[in-house]
Image 1: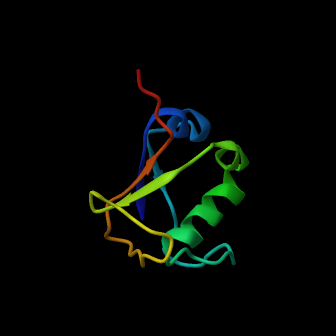
Image 2: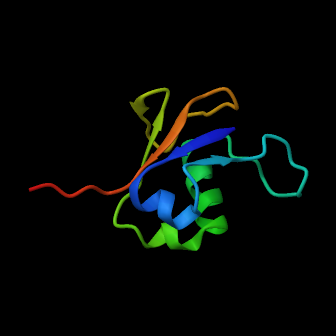
Length: 84
């Protein structure tokens, strides 16, 4: 599955897109929900856990933690934003 990264999430991961395996080659649990994806990303990139908030969009809609995700979904990490 491919994840689009923006703002500070892109800086933390070091790329604008991230590929997450959709099969358990490494023995790690494959994320099936938004909550599992957040956990997977936080374990892989601990700096993401330090963000004050991190929204996930699935197919251009903000997604709750219980939303099921598939390898063909368009997923984006949306970091906290400030305005003025």
